[in-house]
Amino acid sequence: MIKKDFGIWKMKRRVLIIDDEISMRRALQNAFEKEGYSVTTLGSKKELSQIAQNLHFDLALVDMILPDGNGIELISLLKKSYKNIKINILTGHGSIDTAIQAMKEGAFHFFTKPFSVNEVLNICEKAYKQTQLEKENQNLRACIKKQYSFEHIIGQSAPIIDLLKIVKKVSQTDATVLIQGESGTGKELIAKAIHFNSSRAKKPFIPVHCGAIPKDLLESEFFGHVQGAFTGAYKDRVGKFQAANGGTIFLDEISTMPLNLQVKLLRVLQEKQFEPVGSNQIIDCDVRVVAATNSNLAKEVQEKTFREDLFYRLNVIPLHVPPLREREKDIPLLLKFFISEMNKKNKYKITKISAPAVSSLLSYNWPGNIRELENLVERLCVLKEEGTIELEDLPSQYKKISTPPLSSFHIPDAGVDFKCTVSQFENNLILNALEKTNWNKNQAAHLLKMNRTTLIEKMKKRDITQKDSEDELPEKSSTL
Image (tube, rainbow, N blue to C red; front, side, top):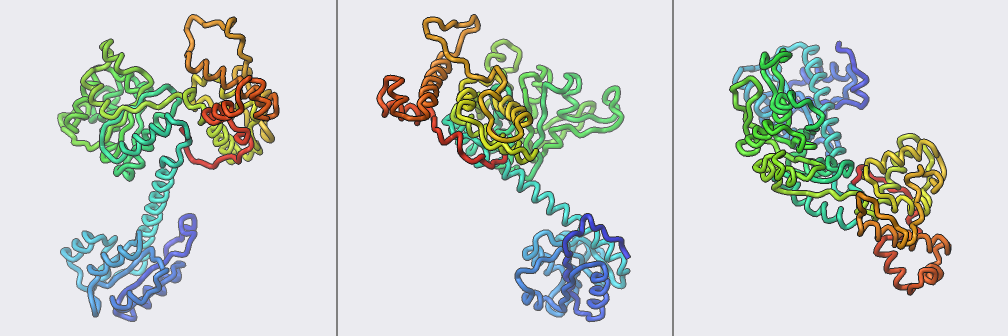
């Protein structure tokens, strides 16, 4: 008898046996039940309709010749009724043509009577393992699709809402996309959202960081090579484009790609073909290209460091991911999300982040964008472990510095972002007044010498609410 793999077979396995010979049904039933299967036996096609609707079968053994039908007919019927079922055909009149026909219809194996019961059990073991792997892959794809669904991208600010509107439309097409934005803004997350919400979602998503691969290996990395193509090419290798066939390839930091390779990438985009290094064989590829960069490609085209024709090929659908400093409204949401994730991951008990601490972080410029924010939250949670994150818990560079009078404000040689600076200054004034008056809007408006209604309108516009610091931590699965 076969050895049971309890690591894989944790649940009761169910097998359906359909054969008009009573002796055959009993022999197979005894053998499978000894191996821990739950067995259902039938003597005809008609009896199949009498099975309870809530039953599910992992495997089926079906006789080719039945009183009211044949095994080939039952293959499609069983596959429609039972997802992932593996069907094996039994026959006393085996022929190569019949076996080929059964396999074309989706049979897993074809047994010719008389057969060894141990052989049947071993083949069914392999079929069951394959079924479990298929289920795991389906569950994984479902989890990934959920993780990169638009509903799970955190952000309520106008720039993110506008971006997602375009991304939803783009995902339904095969158009080439160029994502531009500063480092740490979530460009790869947008690329994954495009892929996993497209018709290519079941095919590979292959990310390639162009700047992380040595220039002399980039061509081989992209298009593969044949044995002997260069020193060290000891065997054939499949490139990223071939690996991504049918799916999406994400070319991160495309601006770092050498000019000679840009020509070959242009050919792939135009002709959907490429040649592996050292080979004359032309390989067709059906790949969607999504590229990303934190550089100004249009400027690089003018400076002749990036090909103009490739730029226009990539820039079919341009997307701009806004920096975090332009998404003030999203910072409290992101803070809560990252704290929640750290609590779940490391069993911390951080309850919230105080209003003064949030206010201080809203005033920060975030040069590292979301990546910097995530790293900061991890640092704070590791050091705090429980309770409320207060203003004094923040590293010095994140603590709000009181804004000096405008007459003494010094503009550095590098200049300032006027709109951002004025916005932060006004935001600080409002928050300081509210905190000073314990969030009494009448008193805060009096301190600021403005009407209460004006203050309330400004608070709404800037999404300033005392409730933000008390809200439950959100449970989301991805961030942007």
